[in-house]
Image (cartoon, rainbow, N blue to C red):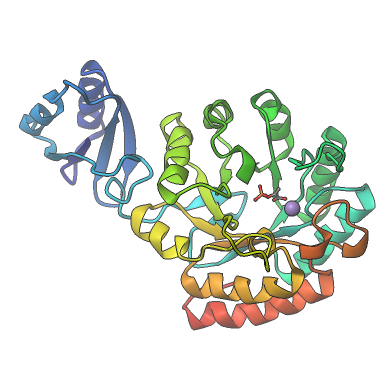
Amino acid sequence: MIIVLKAGATETEIDQVAARVRALGYAPHMIRGEIRTVIGAVGDERGKEDLLSLENLECVETVQRILQPFKLASREIKAEATQVRVDGVVIGGKRVVVMAGPCSVESRDQVLEVAAKVKAAGATILRGGAFKPRTSPYAFQGLEEAGLKFLAEAKRETGLPIVTEVMEPEKVGIVAEYADILQIGARNIQNFSLLKRVAEEKKPVLLKRGMATSIQEWLLSAEYILSGGNPNVILCERGIRTFETATRFTLDLNAVPVLKKLTHLPVLVDPSHGTGHWEYVESMARAAVAAGADGLIIEVHPRPADALSDGPQSLKPDRFADVMTRLRRVAHAVDRDL
Ligand code: PEP
Ligand code: MN
């Protein structure tokens, strides 16, 4: 249920309503808009209709049922777009945010070189995996903490905040010491203990869509993080499994307008994993921006042929810089900055 407070409700009144919500057995979540505050009362609603009685309070405008199964992620509870802030970077604002860097952190030199080059090309967040979810146990598994340290050094040198993947609840603490954004990978979207653990952090979470996850399931995974107390969730479409084999996955750009309708959370697109081939990355990046994505995450490697993971879909730094120049024109055409 959502409790919409009247414009001008005081802090004391808001606290009183929250206390009543708690007393009725729900968790209150404050959503502060520019004009009015809304309290999301989430919890098991069976046999508990009593929230409607809050309409009798002077400061309450209305109490409404949220129709979608995801509550805090829904546009019904918050019409305004959520902006997630990471250092000086706003994700979900007018500027399309580009996160770029290697699939895996492979060495100090590699990550420092890529970081400087993607920054010069206009990326505002550095990506790089230190814990890698690999299909084969024989494939490179990541440099782990040593990789996180290289990312931290790249951040010191360039000022770029870091997004990096965390795969297990036990590793959230160590990854959060270095990362500015915690990435949950496609293979972990329904790792509910991991979702609950990142909800305890205040750091933003980049929640990638699973390769066989419906949009509703994806938003329910986001709901685990939001209801656990972390409001800073960024969604990332990265391609789904279909019958098509010409590309690695099928990038579901339908998800962009669908998510924009259903949720207030920012939406990113990953054209690197979505296509699996560097030649297709630019087209799908442009299409994503034109479709209304708030940002992109793109794999860039100084020597893709030598990459320890995802070389075939990685752009060389020079090409990435050219892609950024052309993407900027698409962004301007749809009234965004880049
Ligand atoms: C990645 O970003 O390198 C990655 C493993 O992505 P995904 O989880 O989308 O496959
Ligand atoms: Mn990758």
